[in-house]
Length: 202
Image 1 (tube, rainbow, N blue to C red):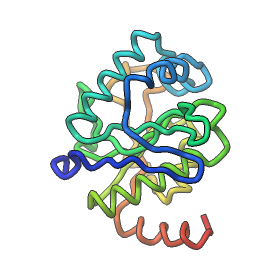
Image 2: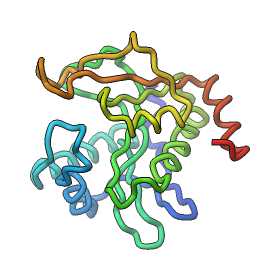
Image 3: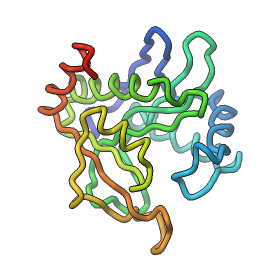
């Protein structure tokens, strides 16, 4: 699967968004987002500028290797950095219970919340993942208390089996965010739910 992803991440423009690869100019926007406690509520901590700089380095390195890594979401009119949303191949030092996988992930600045930005971008990348990259399954995961993200996963047609819930391998035993939930979407279900998107039902 990974081999089919290389150099296949396009620049996509919608009426209000630009979805694109990471660039060095994104650092300030990434720093602002990652230092906001509202954004990082369901992550271990806010991130310093140096930590965000290292994150950008990792994202750009993975992008060079695979073709993408949770692409940038930008406001088309203002060119403002809104965050990221898209496909990723998780590569934590400790493996996830369901590795290897293709992940859909997102993180947006608060000004972009509640406006359908993540849903719009995620639908585009799900279509790209299944139709162009021919993925068999795309997953998303978050803490069991992050209801906003879980609601979005459900709106995208993803389904959760409680038997798939897991402890994140990068968090210590007893950490309040340790327990995570996994949502899955396979190609057959995507073809079904995406028809409702086209019909304006979701």
